[in-house]
Amino acid sequence: MAFRKRALHLALAAALTGTAALTGCAKNEGSSSSPSPGSSAPPASSASEEAGAGFALGEQPLEFSFYGHYDWYTMPPWGEDLATKWIKENKKVNVVPVSSGGNAKQKMSTMIVSGELPDVIWMERGADVEKLRSEGMLVPFDDYLDKYPNLKKWAGESTLDMLRSPDGKIYQFPNWYTTQPNGNSGYLVNKKIYEELGSPSLETTDDLYAYLRQVKESYPDVVPFEVGQGAEGIDILTSAFAENRPYLYSSLHMLAVPSGDRLTSVFADPVFRETLQLANKLYREKLMTQDAFTQKLEQVEQKVVTGKIAVYAASSPTEFGSKGNAALSSEDPSAGYIIVWPIHKAGLDRNKIFPGDYKQLGWNVSVITKAAKDPEAIFAFLDWFTGPEGQRTIMWGPEGLYWEGTDDEEAPLFTDKFTSDPQGRDELMNSTVNFQWNGNTVYVDRSKTKFESTLPPEKRNWETRWQTEITWKTQYNTTEFVNLAPAGDSDEGIISQSVIEIYEKAKAKAVIGAKSEDEVLAVLDQAEKDAQKAGYDRLLEYKTNKWRDNLKMLNP
Image 1 (tube, one colour):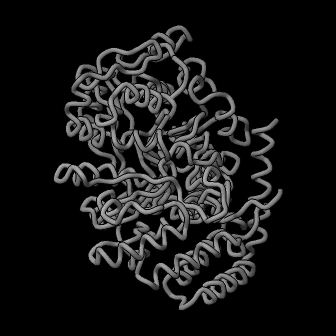
Image 2: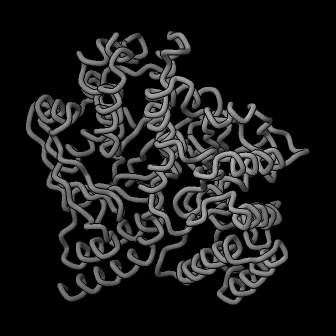
């Protein structure tokens, strides 16, 4: 019996590690960085009492281990920042980090094989979760949802139904779930350079090309078009060539383009092909980042913060843009960054251009394993964490510093210090970013926009301003395309890995290797042939069926 259990663990480890490498770069899909809120909710403690909760935070200590299944993720020490220190002292909760060591694939495999799983795993939803669930390693949440009602209240039944596993139960606690648009994908523009060049029209792809040429001629030490790590900005640019077409379709996360009632090849997609032709042209003329496929994220940040870029396209340009705006404007009031309305091809409706997307399910999920001694207590904490008090605390610190009291919808009443001490406030908020595992988009976004609307323009938060004016308005609802990825050890999963490798090589070759626009198309034609040989049609059929299942669930 012990041998069989170990064999199952070995098989599961192999299956999970087959897809782990694909999920390590998914941090920016979520978003990202800007959340959103819903109707008023009773305080978490009283709501739990009314529902007959079995575990009350703060009455007895709770400690659990937490593992973030990403190469890039390192959990900061719990209790050393103001927010988690308050939680540790007042709610008696201590979270013990389990590090991936920069190799999540290997770490997960080791934990599964040894049978030493952490209490909580923070990971991508979908195939990896189902592997753990099917082997009986996860705890279902269904018995807890009414006892601890924050998740049920804020996420809503339709979102919870989308999270259900084939056995009908819920094992996943979503992060940054939402019922309203959110997201930051778009175009950041260096304000000073733009104004010094006469603030020319920057609406169409032709405008963009003309502007980048101006920048190159006038500012030789500036990157005209920064596309970020992994050339992510090229993905964003695909949205410019078709209406209602977020970059998700041709990104690594989907690699399938809706056409009628089917998902079709990205390599044959006219939008993707035209985008890579433009990207190749920008690269050949040195109007675009020359090390786009090799540069590190830190290099991108440095260029943005020091003002060495003219235009930056990314899934969350506001993250570095906010830092850069603060740094540049502190030295020169006329300097900084703005966000422009998404670029579009001439002839298209600018109001139907969506560079980014959002999903009801949000970004990723937390699962509780059967290694946990008291899974209900952990769920009680996660539910409190996603509720108003938990969100206020982890976003803006404990009461008494940047907020004092709440309004009738439990939104925090921000103090004068919130606006008079932006540096301290931002430092606090940055210190808790990597603890935001159960983000409640609707609550957070409504809380901050409600407050920002009461301030004069010059005192409004830079990031919130551009989110409310542009980015939230230009993100597309792609909930119907969640959970399309096959299990890593399935036939489709193996095909998926091959197609991804073909895609990555072809994209780089088309952009930086092709000598002409015709060569770009030739590269993509060959990639299509190679993908079809690898079984791409079968993968697309699988994704199409999953998409249709989602549509039935969303439209019963």
